[in-house]
Image (cartoon, rainbow, N blue to C red; front, top):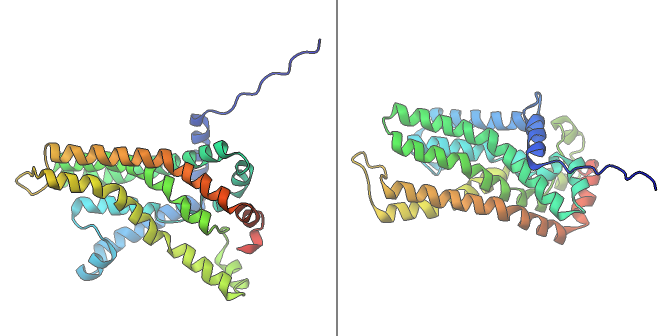
Amino acid sequence: MGATPPRTREPTFRADLRGELGRLLRWPNDDLLTIGVNALLVCGGWLLLPPAAKAWLFTLQGPLAFAVVLAAWMLSDTPSTNMLGNDTGRALAALPDPARLRRLLRVKASALACVIGPISAVVCTAIAVYGDNAAAGLAVALVLLVLPLGVAAIAPWLGVAWPYHPRRLAWRWAHRRPWRRMLRWGVVVVAPYGVVPVIALALLFPGVLIGLAIGDRAANGYLSGWSLAVPVAITCLLAGAAFAAGPLATTWLIARREPAVSDYLRDPDRG
């Protein structure tokens, strides 16, 4: 009898996550650069814009709200919405296997959360310590560690509907015709700034509304006691549910759009 070939072990989720974090944090990396640019845009807009423009651009206001807005804007771009187009090799390899595709999406969402969550949580904690509001700051920081998981699990729905290939601006300009394709790219690049914050607010608002309904506030006007703990628990549960269900919906959407999605990903000249 011939020798039994050794069984190859599937990489664990932890190993996949480690590899994705290595890819994401390797410099130079377009995804990491995008996250950094969005963080700078938020800081500049928050500090430099006049109050009316700031209120129009940022729905949430207040010192601790800055950390929430920072997290949402760092997620509001192609690293979260265009996961398939940004990594076409692995995406195409995973498309025929829904379970493998769901795992890939969860790994990418987790990697983004591992980068964005701690940054925004540290910023929130620093603001809270400076403002002598440790309890509320700790609560919001806990939310910010979990919220990116849920947001990054739902955001790829936009990239399934309108994927695109990362290309330099010089290539875009050289291939600007037909103008319809150029217009499509412009819309897809701008759309995350409107879509992703809405996802974040949808996960945040149920807990906040319940906390306000409970109505237990400290002397400084912030929620306290159970009215602070309950929103944190509800938001974390919603983010966890989104992390679990989001990739399921994404694979369902992809199955409905096959073979259009795979054809698009295989042709980088479609921009």
